[in-house]
Amino acid sequence: MARPKKVKTEDQPDSSLLSALKFISLITKDIGTPSETHVRLQNNLATASNGILALGCPIKENLNCCPQNSLLVHTLSKCTNDIEYQQGLMLSIKSGKLKATIPCLALDLISNITPDEPIAIIDNRLKQGFEVVGMSSMDTNNQTIYNASILLNGPSIVGTDGKVLIEYWHGIDLPKGLPIPKNVIAPLLKSNKTLARFGMSQTSVTFWYDDGSWIKSQLYAEQWPDISAILDRPSQQAAVPKDFFMGLEAIKGFTDALVWFGPSHVRSHADPSVGALYEVLGIKEGPIFNIKQLLNIKAHIKTVDFNVSVQGGNMLLWFGDNCRGAITGIRNGEN
Image (cartoon, rainbow, N blue to C red; front, top):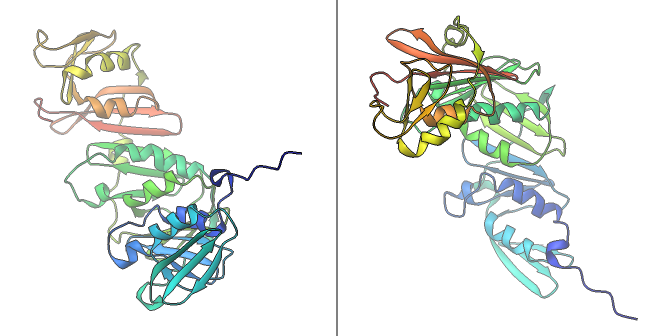
């Protein structure tokens, strides 16, 4: 009878510690300050903080040390047998033919981060909201409160870069007026875990997952301006013109940034004889927008008014499923 084959390394489930460290790695670095490169393992919990965000995840292993995270992740990913740990000035690991020592810092050099106690039930609708409003986080040098944060606002969440404003209704009963650093978007979206609970204090919020892990974020003390003056402005909503986005895709290779609206067409330049032009029935002459900003909302926009008057210019207002938004028009072709 043939002998059974050994299970390959990639087919073996991750250890409790390795799974936790992969989650923690959403905010740690290979090179950086001690708190950015090391993870704290204590009381069956793995935690790390970069000064703005902190992540925590339960572990089965009874360890009490602060090892270098990326090196520990690499080592554990190569373990094919039961793992033995020995703690001292280094964390020693033995698994089959593999032996390794991971450098550690003293526990008192890495802050002991605790999460906020849960106050509400949440789910992945909130994650969907962060994904949608995160589209507004384009590169900009504007460091105002609304540019640097995402606004958790009761049943909705709002994001802007000063030119694009998006609101998404997740429908969960949460506190209003909480400015959360945009740094939280990436780890929230990259994690495949299921959101379960929400906690907060006067200075922080914590997003809990159903496996007991969490992401904690600082809150900004400064408050957002009133966005209702923009999003509640009267508009003449109509269905997005047929072939509108096909037209944008057709001309985008001819323009660095802008799309010009002409009578029943979109074009890449102010001069219709230059670049590319695409016929789109229903388009009226006048507005100018950033083409990337328009393409970013393609999956969500259902109705739109391209020419809502604002002081000194125009903007477009749009509505979609559970979301709405505004994009500032370009004045005199200046992006």
